[in-house]
Every structure is written in C-alpha cells, then in structure tokens.
Image 1 (cartoon, each protein chain N blue to C red):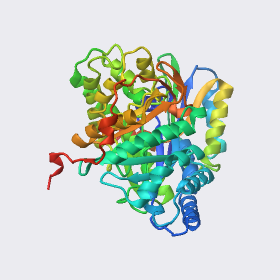
Image 2: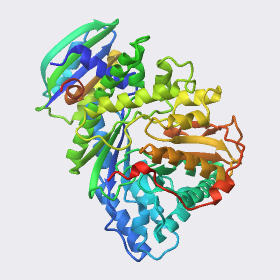
Image 3: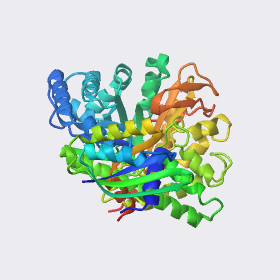
Image 4: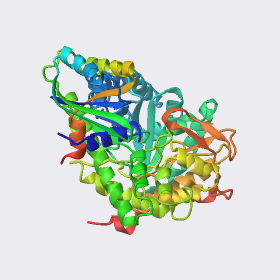
Amino acid sequence: MKAVITVLGKDRVGIISGVSNILAESNVNILDITQTIMQDVFTMITLVDISGCNIPFDVLSAKLDKKGVELGLKIQIQHEDIFNSMHRI
Amino acid sequence: MLGTFEILETIDMIQKENLDIRTITMGISLRDCCHSDINISCNKIYDKITRYAEKLVITGENIEKEYGIPIINKRISVTPIALIAESCESEDYTRFAKAMDRAAETVGVNFIGGFSALVQKGYTKGDKKLIASIPEALSTTKMVCSSVNVASTKAGINMDAVAEMGGVIKKCADLTADNGALACAKLVVFANAVEDNPFMAGAFHGIGEPECVINVGVSGPGVVKCALEKVKGADFGTVAETIKKTAFKITRMGELVAREASRRLEVPFGIVDLSLAPTPAIGDSVAYILEEMGLEKCGAHGTTAALALLNDAVKKGGVMASSSVGGLSGAFIPVSEDAGMISAVKCGALSLEKLEAMTCVCSVGLDMIVVPGDTSADTISAIIADEAAIGVVNTKTTAVRIIPAPGKKIGDIVEFGGLLGSGPVMKVSSFGSSEFIKRGGRIPAPLHSLKN
C-alpha cells in the first residue's frame, strides 16, 4: 500500500531528516521525493510504501504531525488512492 | 507518480476550500421489526440498528484519517416508521422515536432519519398516528429526524396532509419555543421524496431499498467557488465547463469513500449524492458561487438562471464520476446553513418569493426558512402546497423545512447552532389562504404523470 506525505511551510534545516527518521523507525520505504518552492511555500512530496510499516497508520500519522509542529510545518500523510481517484481515470 | 500540482490541488481543496464528505449514511431496513406489542417492536428496532451500525462511526473515522479527507457526519436512515409501527396497537408512536434516539446515541451517529410517513395519495391508520406523534417525538428526542411525503407527480397533492402539516409544524415550534423551535429544523415535508437520500433531515430508507446500504453525500461549494474565481469574466460555456470539471473531481472522491466504507462495513454501496451542500462556515456557501458568476447579491435578478446553470453542471460533471448517482444530487439552498444566503436575506436582496422561484431549478425546496412566530398554520400549509405543486408539475423533489419561530419578528435572528446555522426571520405574505386550505381533498396528478 502506498501513501503520499506532503510537507508544506517555511524551508529550514532538517526537514528531510526529520521525516525520514520517523519513516525509517517505522519501516516505511521511501519510493520518491520531490521538493520545490511554490508561491513562496516550501513543498515536499514523498511517495512511500507502507506495506511493511510496523506501527498502525494513525500512530504514524500522529508522529508526522507532531514532527510538523516541532519544525513549524504542516506534515500530512494520506493514502495514495485519494489523489488517484481524483486525478486518474 | 502523481504530479506535484495535482497533489497540491487536492490538498488545497480540502484545507483551504472546505472540501469534505458531508455524510456517510447507512440505510437500514426495519421491515422485520413489526410487532403488535410496541415494547417488543421498539426493542427489535434498537437491537437491529445498534447491531448493523455498530462499526459505522469508527469506520468513517478510520477512512477520514487514512485518506485525509474530513467526513463530517455519520448518520442512519431507516424504513419509514409508519410502516413498521402500524402493526402495533398503540396510539402514540413517540416511543419509536425514543428507541431510534437511543440507538443513535449508542452507535454515536449525529442524526437518524426515518420517523416518516408516505401519504401522497392518502393515509393509512399508521400514517395518521405517526403524523400526530411528530411534535412530541421531535421535541423529546435529540437526533431523530422526521419527514412526510405529501405529494408526488404520480399521485398529485394530498391537500388533507398539506393542511395537517401546517398545524404539525406550528405544534413543533410551540413545544420547542425555548430552543429556537428546533423541532421544526428536524422535520421536512416532501413532494416526490427520494428513497436513497443520505442528507438530513429528509433521509429515510425507502421501501424499494435493500436490507442495508451505504449512501454517501459529497459536498464542496467552496471548491466550485474557488474554481470560478479563476475564470472571472469568461462566458457561460466556460463557467459550465469549469463547474463540471470540479464536480467530477469532488464526486470521484465521494465514490472512493463510498466504496471503501461499503467494503469495510461489508454492506452494499448504494449511491453517491452529488449535492452541493453549504455550511455556515465562510467559504462554504452556494450563494457565493452565484455571486461569483456576476450577481451583486444572491437574490438579484439572474439568480434563478445562475442556479439553473450550477445545478445542471454539477449533475453533468458528477454523473460521469460515479457508477451510481442518486439521492437529491444538485445544489441545496438552505438559508440558515449558508453564510451568503443569510447575508442576502439580511440586506433585503433575497425574499421568500425569489427562493420559491429558485426551487424550480435546483434539487430541493424551501429549506431552513425562518418565518415570524405569528404565521398561521394555514399560511404554512399554503407555502407547502406551492412547493409541492412545483415538485409535482416539474417531476422533481421539493421540500419545505420551515421554522415559525415563536415570539420572533421579521429581522430577528434565530440561532440553531452547528451545521444548522442561524436564520434571519423572513417576511411571508400578510394575505390569508385559509379558505383555500380548508377545502381538503386531493389536487389531481398532472397530465404528464400518465406516461405509460
């Protein structure tokens, strides 16, 4: 099962390491990362495989959210299908 | 992989433009809960609802977390209670409503619909008792919603029921006078009621429906408004095209959630209802979409045409996105639940007459309209008759959810709280209709009902 992690906010040191540490601890594999600045907002989008994840999805989601608060960013994880259903026929 | 733009578009829709799944509604048949003893029947109803809907709320919450899309309401609709209660010998059906309320509380949903009767062609004994029990039932329960279908294109308009409902609504208002006449907000009078509507207060589980079913209502007036902001000044072809594309995307999300909920609950998927349902939140208003099309204020001349375009484009976009579209599917125009409508009424741009015209071209009727407390039962009945006529002649659903707020005068505001919002008291005609309502009987079905 794949999920999309989005990080939105102000660029700073340690965003990728903050997110990827949590993912590594949870045995979540990163498949792709893109990052860009859109309308002055730092935007990082990460596609991950959560089939091997060793904690429940809502716990992972809460951990990422907490990391976001620490870094002053908005971090969110969502099942990939929500985007596929809207943009792919 | 999906493009950054696409992912951000979806996230913006949810976070900035109030896109949400408005409701997951589980329809449950209670046809096996009839019994001559009201206690046994009520116990069967409680047991069945709590058994079937046990995991409804938690499943909804899990989907919400995993997909990151808010699911605002989890609700239940049941077989019209008049059909179930009729087998018992009791006169007062309030206890059925209480059993429904208890079940709703146990499973954690926020509304349960189906304290209903279908009387478009006439009453049965059970229908009469149910309608008589409505004021007591709605004023002594929290989550129960009631609806009465008084007309259909096939049967015409049951004017006896129309006359009676005026009185029922007044009684509901009186019994909840201290609470903004809240009972009236939980009561809908329909023409051409649909059997698979997931939205409250008019949801019930129709008699042609399966044992149990999942229906989903999507929403997203804010998303449509934001999409139109990007095509300022463009012609109506572009406007319609933009709404269609947006409705398509919104509905795809609804379809995904409906299928996922249906799979996890092991209950068949019924329909996705495409309705644009506003909330009192700023930026979640149908009126603002109409204003975005170029109207100074909702209610100005041109509003009906704008709404007709919106309603049609929403359907055309949505119908391609789902394998099963149903319910009411269109644009809702509830006054108290829409910040733009409230503001239009307050500044005098939007009147009851204009709203009536608007209901000819959208999916519902006069919804969440607050009128002065001294409005007579006959006048309310006449308002219902007008709406029913629009529904019957145009072969569409219309409904009246009207609140004659005790002690309130034109210009006052009645607060309902939550999704029901707050309603400015609107002017009704000061000329009477009582001789018209007194006639009773049935207004025959229109000629075009004879399609066979």
